Length: 145
Image (cartoon, rainbow, N blue to C red; front, top):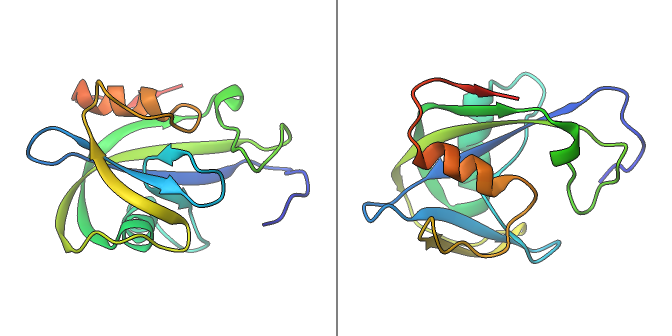
């Protein structure tokens, strides 16, 4: 991972997935042991939606479709990643997704994949709780901050 200071923000995406019981899908990261919404950085020449689905597939083994935008989160104070420093600023775009196939399995980046009740979440990375709450609230408008 490149740890040089950024001159422009990075863009990351997250897939927020709920099962039929209303539980949210989370992945436990191998680099820091924290739970998170599956996701990661957007690659060059990749749409936000395609990046979201790719990251979900890579980290969980699941295939999905994007249902709608949950929110765009740009507050620099809430964009820190545990392995990055204060010179990092990441714009985070979260999408509500629906599983269409695949089989849950961990990856190099994830040691465990599990559904949790939205009111019984484990320790999560930075602002993931807020993004889950926004998805649970089922807001039809996009959130921007």
